[in-house]
Structure formats: structure tokens, C-alpha cells
Length: 261
Image (cartoon, rainbow, N blue to C red; front, top):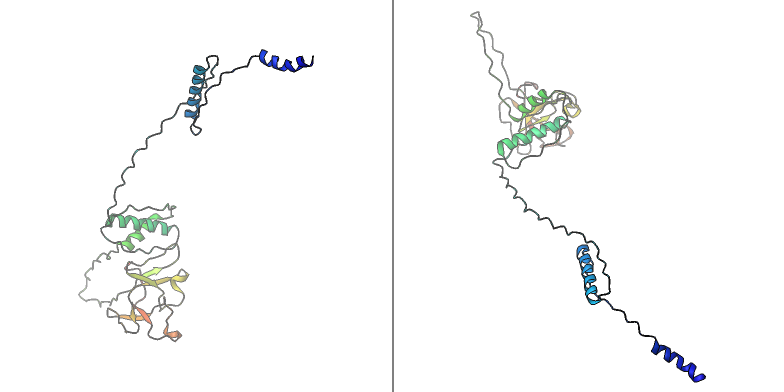
């Protein structure tokens, strides 16, 4: 009886057949491309069906691979011709929006005269009286000589006594609404013959040529009738104990005038 019990497991192992199941071959698919991965898995299903006929394959819909767009070659940028000349420096009023319009007009005039790279303009707000600004800028950029005055002959035979005329320094400065500029090569300073602070506090000044006189070398003025006065733009002043101070030349006998602007 004991021997029969020991043989039962052996008989049971012989009587139960081994369950053999078909194994699909392993396939390695890429994981960095969704389209290639899907196609690889479907191919693995077909391969498994061919290897194991009883296997039912499961196919999945694969996305369509979008072709990479071909990038068009960059368009050649036209070479910018170097400017034909060097534009004069224009000093614009430091008042908005006049300074904006003045800067744009300066760029436009320089581009039309000398060429070069096309300038980039600022976006300027409208001003109350653009005609006044355009006239002022035109006079500053291209100062023109005043038109000749026609002299009428006196009816009587008595010749009038001529009034002597002297050159005058043009006015400059003023308030923000009517700021006046000097022509190229001239600079605006306080009139030393008048009290007050001049252009620094929205007052008027006079235009003088930006050329030194006096100093250690004792440079004189270029024309007769001019005098050398202290240049208020530096720290050297004879009144404060300075020596050999440089100055600028002004006309001696007349105050500033609007002529010449």
C-alpha cells in the first residue's frame, strides 16, 4: 500500500501531457519615432502569425509621417553702399517733440545728400504748429542769405545821412515754445552785455563762432569790430582770479538780432 502511494506522483506525471505553447519571436523596435515604432509592432504581429499559425494578430493604425519641409535658401541681402560724404552735425533742441522731428529731418537730409544705409526714423507725436518747426529746421540746416533790399531814391535832392550798420550776433535760445538754434559752426552762449542767466533759464542768448580767442597764445578775433569775451562754458574766469582764460569773439557795438538765423 505504501509503495502505491509513492508511485502515484510518477504515474500522474506520465499521464498528464506537457502543455507546449508557441512562442512569438522577439523583435526590437525603435522608441524615438512613433511612426517607426507602430510599423515595427505591426510587422512583429505578422511575424508572430507566420511563426505561430494559431496566433491572432492585432494590428494598430499607424500615423502618417509628415515630411520635413524643405527650407528655402536665405535671400541674399543687398549690400549697402558706403556714404558718399560725411554729414554735418546738427544740434537739435532738447525739447519734446521738437527734438524727435528735428532728428528725423536730420537723418533724412543726410541720407538724401550722402546716401549710405537707410535711416530708421523715430515715431514722433504731432506738434501744434509744424510749419514753424519746418521753417526753423530749414534755416538751421541750410542758412540762406537775406534777400537784398531795394533802396528807393529820395524825391528831394538832399542826400540822407547814411546810418552806419554793424554786423550783429544772431539770437538763440528762448523758451521751449520758440527755441532758436544757431547755424552749423556756431554755438549759443549768454550775452555777456546783459544780466540774467540766458539760455540756461529759457532766456535768449547770442550765437558766436565756436572758435577760441585769447588764452595763453593770445589769439585775436578774425574780423575788425569784434572783441574777445570770456567763454562762459568753461570754469576759467578773470573775475574769479583766472589767468590766460580762453574766450569767444562777439561784435562789440550791437546786441543780438534775429538776422542771420
